[in-house]
Length: 203
Image 1: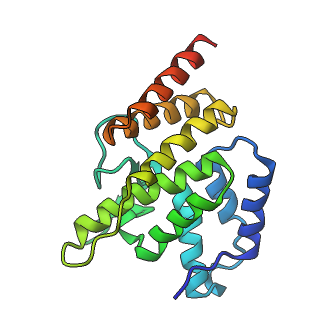
Image 2: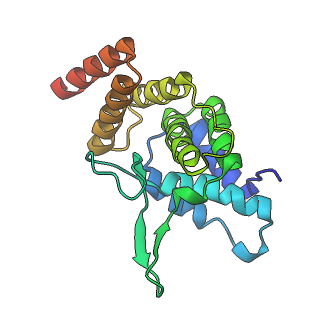
Image 3: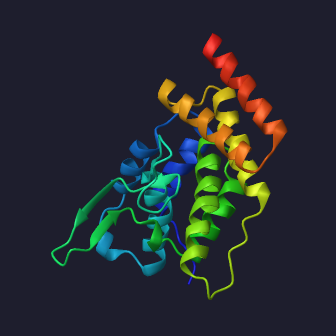
């Protein structure tokens, strides 16, 4: 099985990448979803492609240290309790499999847009940790330090190049870049994030 991106979504993402304009991740996810004419007509590979791109952009980001339900930076947009008492999440990080995580890793290396690069790299970094924890009997997904560094650099690039959608997104990018840089103990990236934050605050 391999992931396939339907042409309408691929064209939209290409336009975002070549246009190099700011965008809100959640708004883009719903825009991509609107391009899927008939979900029932999609192949399994195309469905997985929609999961990777649409759901990947739909995860909300944490604003505090409280990170239910998976203890990740990314959380579900919505949740509800089923009749049997179990809780459902939309999107659900536990439904993101090895192929999708690898797809995000690959896309983080390929896309020229800093906001997309940050999102893909950070998703791969975070969701792979969840997958490894949930599958202790299977070979772990590699989580190289460079993946976190790529996310940090992309968040900061988006701010430096004025590609943040608004001030809220700017501070979110700066905060997440700082958090990741401290986590992997990359002093150069910590200093870059701090300098950029002070500069943005002055402006």
